[in-house]
Image 1 (cartoon, protein in one colour):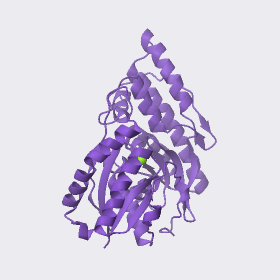
Image 2 (cartoon, helix red, strand yellow):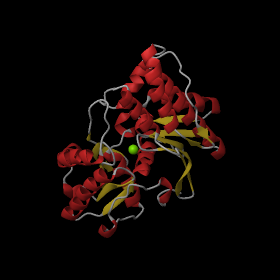
Image 3 (cartoon, rainbow, N blue to C red):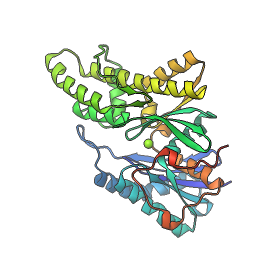
Image 4 (cartoon, protein in one colour):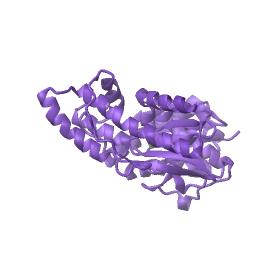
Length: 335
Ligand code: MG
């Protein structure tokens, strides 16, 4: 029964998780939260992660009731993500692996999300919508690859929401997206925004520019409220995501959809996806914030699958990479 320790720190969350044969034994996490109106910069974020990572490691082991001897493999996020945070966390993973004399595994962050979603929900072969601050992809598994059917051609949907939150000076605690979601519930006027689906791909940067502009104009004249803009932004970008997910499901003849990534815990997105799935006679799977927001257990779980399939990352190849596409990894652990 191998136990795998996973380190995640590719953006503003730092997490250490322990997974043993499909059971999450521990999954503590901290978030680097910056002042309203600001985002998180790579250097500051890395400093935050370095300050808390050893406490988190101890916390994870204690919570799991394990010692270093019980750990069979150290998994860490190889990429994609921000360079400085990724590098800081990888240094700790490499050091721990050498101190404890354990094998090391570099994990693709996106695949961590997918494997965690599959584990928690029990979805067998879902069409995956991966939506977060850094990523927006529609993915379907075929012949040992997680293949990308559609994706953003510029910024991620979560980045669009986060940056609009900065315009409105919405709090980043617990996350800008969560606070937009709460404000959107109180909006009732739908402001028309660009709808930019291009084949199977989507684009969000033009929508962001448009709504930044609209916010200046319409809030000054009282034409609409900040809540109306949050509501309109969510309705528009989520409709785009539902559309490309549905098209991928139709193409693959899929009857399961799985939402992963930090934006995946938005209940309005889940509701819109569920309505689409119901009309198709398909099932929607989603997880809550513990597992859809970046966490250590998702890296441990993908690591566990890779470890069982015989993967190992030699020390000489245990670097990080800011760009690492989901379809670059050969998925040897699935049929
Ligand atoms: Mg992520």
